[in-house]
Length: 165
Ligand SMILES: [Zn+2]
Ligand SMILES: [Zn+2]
Image 1 (tube, protein in one colour):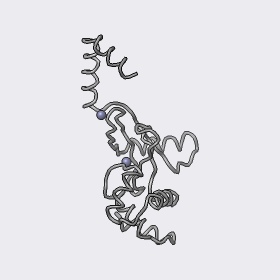
Image 2: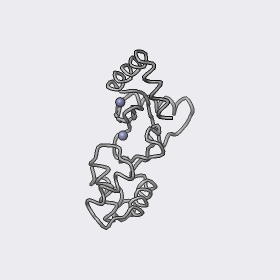
Image 3: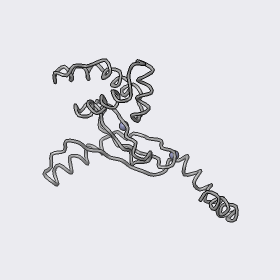
């Protein structure tokens, strides 16, 4: 996958510096959606000389060049932004708002939606981002247990709330 990124960079006349290569590699291989701070930590393991400013600046450049996508994933982690390679096929992100697990939905319905919007609005879509927030199956169980606990022991929970405030 990285070779195709290198090819597209060469076409655009962009030099793949060492820090860009390290970051692209990390984003591409992680298969996850890492935030800037995690990427900085990982990049530093590869090259101790890389500092935070360089990493953040490089991420910004990669975004401007259209090589990586910056996501906020429904802000489940506050103001944090997450990065993934643009080389992936278009997909929707399904985010658990309780544990932060992120799943990816690939598939024809997304392409269909895109085509329908283009037809209905006479719109040329350049970028589409689909984010869906909710609770994963694991968290649904935990949440229903929490609700039961609240119902069973209202006094204990009230006491806990008072302590926290
Ligand atoms: Zn969850
Ligand atoms: Zn993704």
